[in-house]
Length: 352
Ligand code: AHR
Image (cartoon, rainbow, N blue to C red):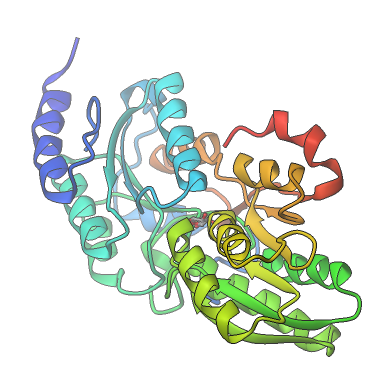
């Protein structure tokens, strides 16, 4: 039976769904730049952040209410993350208030304020950009509601005591690994282009840094002739690639900050009569099923995995924090690198 608190939450969240977007949440639906993803897995200020507030040692998954402020639905990767959050909440019996911000920071801020007004026990957020969170995170802290960063982090302008943890990947390492993989595909070097993610987003900043630092340090024969944002979307990747190959028809590779933009790049290359995967190597990040299909077809070469399946780690960390326990400052994902030669075998095990 629904208790009074849950009924109140339902009413509040109905308001949130209207203000944030039109993507209805079925039931109660309502990111680090050099990211300040904490450098090491040290014991958290979770305890510190909660000391002025009352811990809830008797809290369980079934009695906990969580607000989750999602970035949007810009990629298959993002849909995979949303599914992981929703499915895990259902499995554990957590009462989830979910908001889709449609890639707008203002919508995420609104969602957090609605969650605070609803009196949730903790808030998860994948911050669309790394800056501009101090005020609203402070409001959550003042209300004794811990904030957990999921998949995307914030930069050093956001004081570390305003969030408990960052759960997600090492984006700099992903960029570095992409550079190493790409260099192996073009031993003679040459001109390449880079498709960046959303400007100001943690993974875009760090994947650029990790990649470009590695190229500069170890591969002087590789020349990044252009680097532009495709906003982490297929359409953006396609548009930018189509424009850049007119200017640089001799490129030998494309590095995309996510698979979705790589898929757009593949379309643009094919439409221009070029052969992605052979004449122009394609390396990207995420590990979406669709890029495995492109590898099977010989149109993409490598994907550096970035797992969106963060639901279990997120809810576990949220419960521990709410109960008054401590969690690591950085809860890292386990990830691999997948290449064209094994894609046909790997594809069946991909879940996003
Ligand atoms: O924050 C993670 C990134 O966001 C993923 O790599 C990308 O596909 C998504 O849009």
